[in-house]
Image (cartoon, rainbow, N blue to C red; front, side):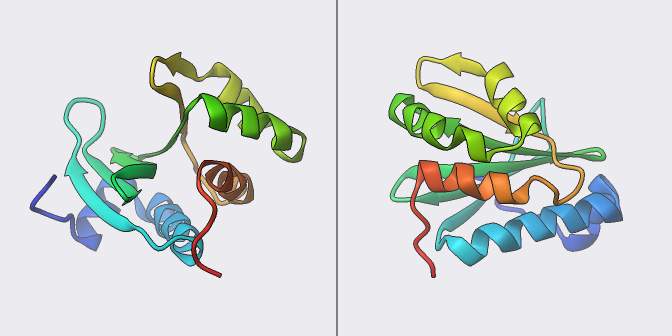
Length: 137
């Protein structure tokens, strides 16, 4: 885990103001539904920062940042993939396509989104609800 949490100005310099606002809004949407531990990491070769939502030793999702790019990842185990199929018809074509194209590993299907605006946030929250029921009203 990273000891140094990036400042707001560091994140704006990295992402640019418009993407930083998308990052902030995504965090707000998640925070409204989930009471979680939040952890910062310096994430090595692919991303500069990782911001993880965890509870009880299990990760709900992770946000990633690098030059002018946000990543938003959810990993679905086998049982959760079956549950996702039940709500698939409520998701946008773009979100379904990204899910279908994601690689499945031994420990789950790793789905990475690269949001540039807030248009898919409702779908992201549906996906998170499949993974874990919201624990805030």
